[in-house]
Image (tube, rainbow over all chains, first blue to last red; front, top):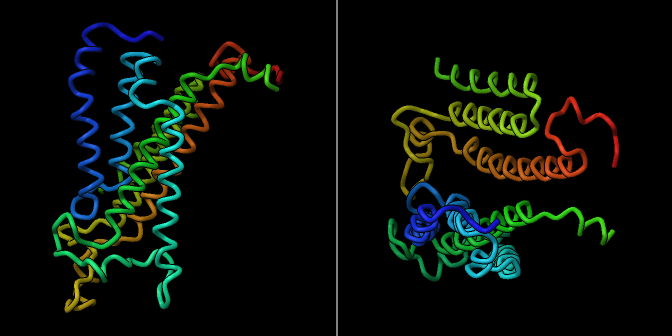
Length: 151
Length: 115
């Protein structure tokens, strides 16, 4: 798996940043426009998957290593859990209550509004993007011989 | 009838599952059936010229009930899409293991029950 032809590599090099930042845009605008954490996370994962398909394993490892994507995956999960528990430990607040909305309401239809929903969207975006990329990497680089030796 | 597209998509997926012999094509057919069911649920909640189901302060809930789309199937389908992604990844992983064990994707040749 050393990559595809020069045409694919050149085009992938050009558009990888656009795809990545479009995904970030979808995640950050999740509380205002259609989209959100899951859809934006899938687009972010698509940019990394495109790099892996076009350039092969070594170059994709340089962009986002497998260990780093595992770490980000777990960070996203813990961030969602902490944002949920934040309201749980305050008095008179249910689980996943929108705590930030009371302290920092913002104005409707702006980026800083809706309390902690953008933060939850960001955590979901990180979780979904790196998780999907991890699934793809582990499916693409699956080596059954090594697996059987370990068993 | 607006649900005809869902039925056609679902039946195409069912045809693929029943007739095709390649495991990859069967997985694609199952994903198509999944998407057909999701589309059906979304279309059930659709209301032409409907508004977003957000209750602003000072708004009459009965007016919102009459004009807004139904948010419940949308939340359900959002979960269903994620589950479909997980199921597809699991099926692809099983297909890879089958290919390494038998050397083929043809289900008529996978019948030896070897490890």
